[in-house]
Length: 238
Image 1: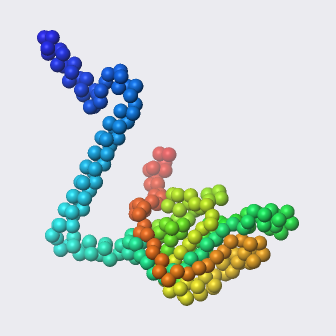
Image 2: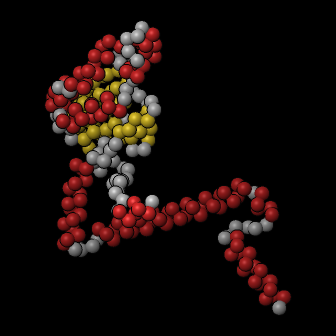
Image 3: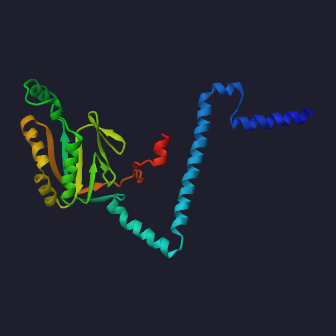
């Protein structure tokens, strides 16, 4: 009976510890516990990566005409959708706030408000829209690839892109026909109005070109997030 009880206690301790030492000395040895847990996490991550590669390999090895056809369609759309790295001639526009001393001088003189001498969401959006209108084939903002679901949001004195806040200056680059992109920028009434503040109060606006600029692929989530209207029953319940 003594051996049986001892065996039960040993098994219980092993299950409760999950592979870790339950003795009091190990509780105070946090470095050892962290290293053990990190090793377990690393091992599990390696296992997940191996399984992911195996799933990809098995998926590509499926011999099915419909699957092959659909995969071909997906591959053909990856580049236009922004999920592949691209390169080519590009035009870049950099927007930045006016210098602080210029803002102070203009505000004290009653010429404009401070809000008029900083870059806003609509300023960035105007440049982005003009570049798309000029036939841009790919675009980045702050080095992040812009795709069809990209939203540009102004939060305080920063702009949030793909959930990440960025401070000025804002760098917008577009790959395409350089002449067409330039004409589209020059034809924008909004940008023309912006440039009046550039000339009068040193609000930041710069253009430059690159004969071969490489843009990264979009690596964020491709899931669409959108609102759903409540049904009559759901609305009545709330």
